[in-house]
Amino acid sequence: MKLLRYIFIYIMICSCTKEIDIDYHSVASMPVIEAHLNESGVVVGISRTRDIDDNEKNKYVDDAVLCLSSSIGDNVRLNYADSGKYVGLVAPIVGVEYTLDVDIDGTTYTANSTMQPSPIIESARFKVSPIFTSNVVSLNFEVQTPTNMQYFYVYQIYRNGKLYKWNTFENRGSDNGRVTKSVLCFYIGDAEDDEDEIIADGDAMTLSIACIERKAYEYLYGLKMSARTTANPASMFSGNAIGYFAAEGVAFRDLGLFNLDSAWLNDGE
Image (cartoon, rainbow, N blue to C red; front, side, top):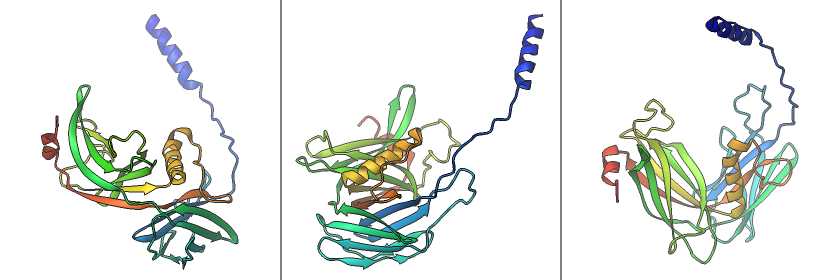
């Protein structure tokens, strides 16, 4: 009898379905600008936001007019490459302020950034460490940093040329002029079919670390947090645009081909 009552309740719950319409407001499309200036030159990516019911995957902007100027008189017009990317050749100087003007359909969006020094990567290696009942692979790296000033950074880990993980950090609380970070990569034996997380033997790994201004740091920090809050980070550009401009000093470290056995050898050090 009790079983029949449970079955009846289950049928009633399953049959009580109602189609719910979600009422959301359409908003005007906004430019999204991501600009980097470093020793390789300047690269700017421009796209537009889209509504939830807009099926267009990429809304690249390919007809903008971009100009990069500096406090010492530089003035460079950027050229369109492809997929919303604009490029230019510049030799940035540490301490010089650069201004990026982006004209889209007659509206100009402007951001400023002061060129930062390149960091020094002291060491970087994969290690296996125990966490509770599992073993995890992490990338441990150490960055040399000045102790008398506050500096901000963003790291990017690439796997076979594609971005694998990234995040921001700062040198506050650094130990004797060095910042040590440990980035958890994946759990050994857990979710082996998760290709987004697992690093396989033979994968080519690269680490880049960029020193950026506080404004760019706050934008990227907010961008990372937006996955939880759904709020847009504070834009560095004037006007109704989302984005940031980072005149960044960048350091790279080739980590070679990943090998789990070598990472195990580092365990306990």
